[in-house]
Image (cartoon, rainbow, N blue to C red):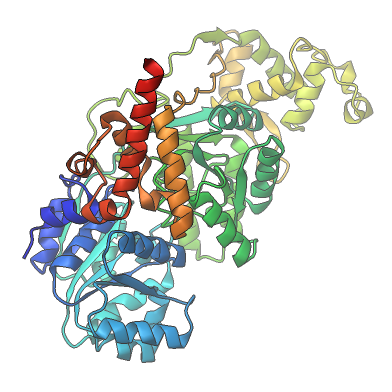
Amino acid sequence: MPEAGEILERYYGYRFFKEGQQQVIDSIIAGRDTLGIMPTGGGKSICYQIPALLLPGTTIVISPLISLMKDQVDALQELGIPATFINSSLDGAEAERRLQQARHGSYRLLYIAPERLESQRFMGMLAALPISLIAVDEAHCVSHWGHDFRPSYLAIAPMIGRLRQRPAVAAFTATATPEVRDDIVRLLRLDCPEIYIAGFDRPNLSLAVVRGENKRDYLRRYVQAHRNQAGIVYAATRREVDRICASLQQQGLAAGRYHAGLSDRERAQNQEQFLYDDIRIMVASNAFGMGIDKSNVRYVIHYNMPRSIEAYYQEAGRAGRDGDPADCILLFSPQDVHIQKFLIEQSPITPERQAQEYHRLQLIVDYCHTPSCLRNYILDYFGEQTHGPCDRCGNCQDDRELVDATEEARQIFTCVLSLRERFGMTLVAAVLRGSTGKKVLQYGLNRLATYGALQAMKEKEIVDLINALIAEGYLALSEGQYPLLKLTEKAGLVLQGEERVQRRARAETPAAAPAAGLLFERLRALRKELSRQRQIPPYLVFHDSTLTEMCRLCPQDREAMLAIKGMGEHKFALYGELFLAEICRYLQERDQAGK
């Protein structure tokens, strides 16, 4: 029997396991129940795919999304590993045909949706398979305390109990607090499981929170600077997703949208265009993302704050799955809190669950306001020990110049006070700018002492400063659909001359990495053509990191190409000669041009 390391190199093209993978694989092969908690991009799927190739019989993989199954099966087939799936996208005859083939040993891995376990007929057919391993992906879905509870996951343990011979069970998740870990063990009825926590840190991700900025302007500047890179923009509501997507398209950017209000056909089409790099930016609600294995997402921007740290880190973790640097930026405004509170209030949940949701919401609000290391905040949340600042997140690297804004802040506070805290930031900014708008004149606000006090600033700049003062706790917003500005004790200290207000100068939008070289673009074009021919996403041909290593090492024979990370024997048989030829052509043209 080949060793796990041999399988890793032969099929996947890697010589070394990532942190934690070897221990998890060894535990599963030894027949022990196993819980693997590994960060997004940490290689969870390899931890059950390699045992599936080493153990007799069939491995059943329980997965929550149709798109996730298809992507993983496509990837396995590209590696030369026999696998298939059964879900609601198939008719009954096709599902039964695949089960028959599985009974005859045609597949090493069979992916199924948890909802199938509720069918007695399907369970009877499943029980006839020679099952050696059951792998539960996204295992946090079994827990009410998780951020994405799925009632169908509760059918997994009873299904395992009805099998004639209980196989080993392996459960995997990327984000699990200690409470969720306990739930996974209890609700899946894992038998004295080995628990491996590979760590939640993603060193290649640059975390940042942007407060007090105009979101539209910031997003426009950022995506224009990174227009050739793949990215995801998350928004809290369908209406916001539609508006942002339309705005980006008007700027000439290749953007698509994804939310539950679209037809199945449009969602599937937009997702496929994103996977195939036909569109660069996906603007989405939280309905998008689980199981999206696109490796070259270079940034994830949250236009609105999500409801919890778990949801944020799960979504942000869709950036940089190839291990290369990626940005995770959360654009915070106080209105985000009110949106999330409204969504909680509208949810049909128990009072106990509602109280839990409010608590989790407050923890991510605290994340958005902490001046400390953002990476450490998240790691602490998941119970992982930290050792000093990371020196890589937005807070640790914030060396912008401090600007005194005390006088502007006093004018804002005085205006709010003179308005008796009965208006929102838009009208306050209009008064300070000296606007002649209808409401300002109707209420006689042009007679206030602060009318026109900040006329040297644009109204948008005043609103941005108000947002910054809210974020720093000088102002507060009332509850309700139309929040009113309120003064806090900190504002009183400024008005009394006991405290000065300083804020960082406006952040410059980070520039994109230098454009890739000519060889990289030629290899990427070849990859795109091959992906179209085989009707698979480009990253299933090769990840960007594999192309980058080809450019760095310029292999010119089979042995050198097989040494490239991500170039297994099956991939070489499919594509190796084509990429070798393209590299050789490039080198010849370069040499001739240099003569």
